[in-house]
Structures are given as C-alpha cells and as structure tokens.
Length: 224
Image (cartoon, rainbow, N blue to C red):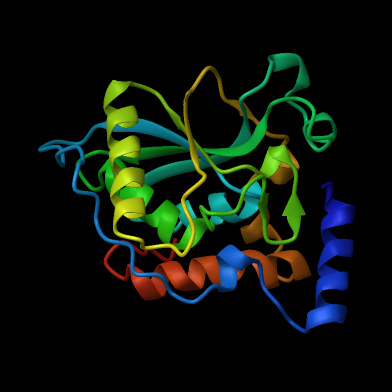
C-alpha cells in the first residue's frame, strides 16, 4: 500500500468505525514476559544490529528510536533482491521484500531479547498474517531477520515461550529467517513519524505505539 493508499484506508477506517488505530498501535496492553533465553548484557560498550519487520516501517522505526540503548534505527527493505529494493516496487507485494527496520544497539545497555520483547509488546500484533492494521500484503508481514545463530536461537525460543504461555489469543505468525541483506529505504521514509507528527496515519497508527512503549517500558523509554 503506497502513501496515498494508506491515507485512503485510514479515511475509510475512520468513516466506518470511528477513530480506530492500527491493531498494533491501539490494542489493549498485553503483558509480554521477558525472554527466558537471551544474550547476556555486555560488560563494555559494543554495537550489534537487529533487523525486524511488521507492518509499515514508519511505526517500527519510531518505536525503536525511543528505546534506551538503540543507537540508530533505519527504515528499509529485506527479503528480496537489490534491484527491487525501492518503495514503488516493494508496495506491489511481489518483490519478496518486507518493509523492515535495522536497529543498531549498544550491547552494554540492552540485549537482543529485550529488543524482541519491545517488538512483540508494542511494535506490532504478531498474530496478524501478511498485514498490520490498515496495511495488507506480504510486504507488511511480520519477520525477524536473524544475523547469526545466537539471534536465531533467542528468537525461536522466545516465540515458543510466548505461544506456550498463551500470551496472545492466537498463535504467533512471525517468521524467523536468515538476513540476506538490508537495503535502506528512500530518504523521505527516514524519521517519517518524527518529521510528520500531524500526519493522520502517524497520529492514529504509530504515535500510540510510542505511547505504549513509554507506558509499558518506562525504564527503556527515551524521549530523544
């Protein structure tokens, strides 16, 4: 769904059902436990990256830009070829790409598992298949793109833990797949929520996610 279509979907949603936010943004608070399997917090500063996807990348980027220990969050594309990593092509849903966010974080301040806890708690609804809120298509699928065996182990164990404890009313459909490449999105997509706070899509779909981050994880929230 391109930017114009996102606004059209929002208008339809408001007309039919009132001021309804994205399912991931305005859902009832879900208590998501800490991962039982996680990396240890580092004793000295170090940088690692995590790549996740789940709906429009504007909201995912906005959430992680407000997480303590995150150095940078970049919107982009993962899952397809380099020659199709551009917005208009990805929006067709035929490229294999998902709108993704690459998170660079300080391993002495936050762990990979803690990032996934934020991801599952406030960034998306992991039980929605190939959609999030008003956005539908494979480009909006929920994915954890792991960069190494440790990330794969933590992600798979965490999903199994959450499913076994029935934290969500339906099974988690988030894919766990190897990261082949990450392609940064066009400049106008970067920091979109911060640069367009009054955009109706941001107001109703993404701002609530950041508010829930502040509410659920005050110890991890940063107002930067």
